[in-house]
Length: 89
Image 1: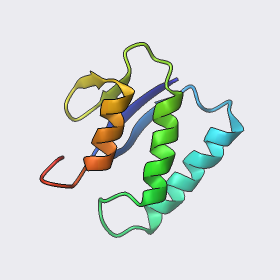
Image 2: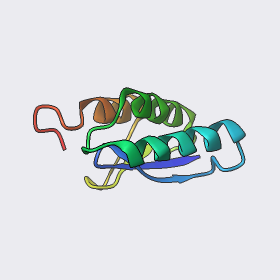
Image 3: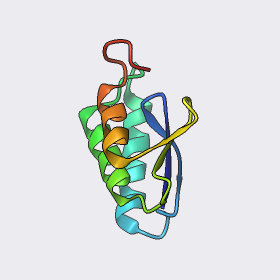
Image 4: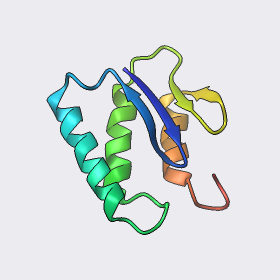
């Protein structure tokens, strides 16, 4: 399973489509995305992203698209958690 993040959210996701739990979570994430007024993610969206991060099996880790780097799961969660705070983008 592969995951790329950008602007504090999900940019690309591969390999989750055969898991009904993850399909349902992605639909919920997208629905929440449509309702928000700012670039900041809701707590629920962050929880969903953390679950996707935990499920990543790509040996490279998670790709941060804007920075062009691969990070481990701990760093990816810190990126999601800290995005938009203290100038972190």
